[in-house]
Image (cartoon, rainbow, N blue to C red; front, top):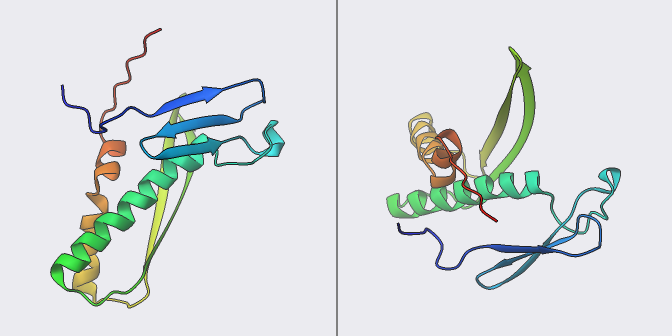
Length: 136
């Protein structure tokens, strides 16, 4: 099996409620929960991190495509949010993503860029089947 990351992401939590240190290849990211949930809100919560992955991947994928095609789009903005819906006693997560281009491309290019965004690696991963194995 070939891992996507050279080094695994590692996390540590001490006695401070909800504050974690997430170690990645070049540094440490602090995560926390909002104050209303008992944290100190000194870093993003897990939902924010998940959406940040989608936003970051969408932006990078669009930028690569735009640069490769030589399109004149100087700035891209992406925002994402999520909500849960219970239907037939099953909870479904819905993610909404909005993309805004500073230099508005024509309709045909917009449709191509939408397909590119839909096919960014994190989008495809979130839409596919994910299996998580856990060991102690």
